[in-house]
Length: 388
Image (cartoon, rainbow, N blue to C red):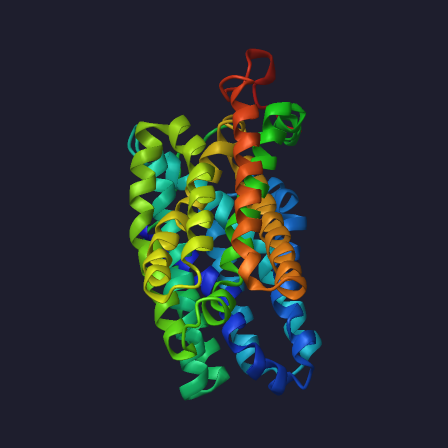
């Protein structure tokens, strides 16, 4: 599992590291800052649109080979970022790794849960998600630091080396999973006929929209609402990321012991958090303490949402994980768009209320999904795997 977490860390650093160096990228590629922003947007959009199809196509291939190949593509893309000053070429190599991003995540999550001891699957998933938290907490600031002190090429070469290290670790240490019958494409697509699955998808989308409507503008909020000096914003965000990374195992244990209670309580916890942020926002000391609490709550969203959707995809786990990845990215896009609209039209002071409203909608969807009963496939929905 640590091998998979390392791979996830490298992938997140590749995906999000560009955020911290966009001004420098715009200057190097000789484009406007808004145009350079497409290097971030096109990645997320590609993940959201192509995830399920990519995972479906990869579902019949050797898992170890696919995981290593994905990391090799990420390493090659970072090498190109270090060498090229052509915006169209760099943009194309943002699309290419984005095609492999959901494939790696879906297969890594499924592999982690298959390799975990009985009753420890949720904890195994949170170990993989620790790579996400570490990427946000350390990978993104490290990319920015290296770019500032050693130049853009050095920042991207370091990320390429990290991806290559993870690739080598997968080839050397990741076990070949026991052979099972290959799932049919029809069987995997069949889960889309379940109404309860779409309610779970809606809950995932709303939950991520709630999380990122606030998180996407946390620096803006701290600066303009709390009045925090910009020199303190970075350390505050670093502390946020550290708490995120440390909090992942807690949610894994909660999901193993009380899965339904944890999933139901989580959007309620987000709602309470945003109300607290709204109250503490103008006050520096209470708000700094709330930032730590915010990180502790935020880190659970990945594991909670994935666990919830997985209940309705037990017979097609990798395809189900691809839906989680695509719709969580859709939720991120929706949340940041709504948050951005509020910041532009009404100011950042009202951001917590947007997050609270989205969290309430996610809670309602979770409760509605629970009314439909357990998320295990009905007998007539599971068929023996055959060659398509």
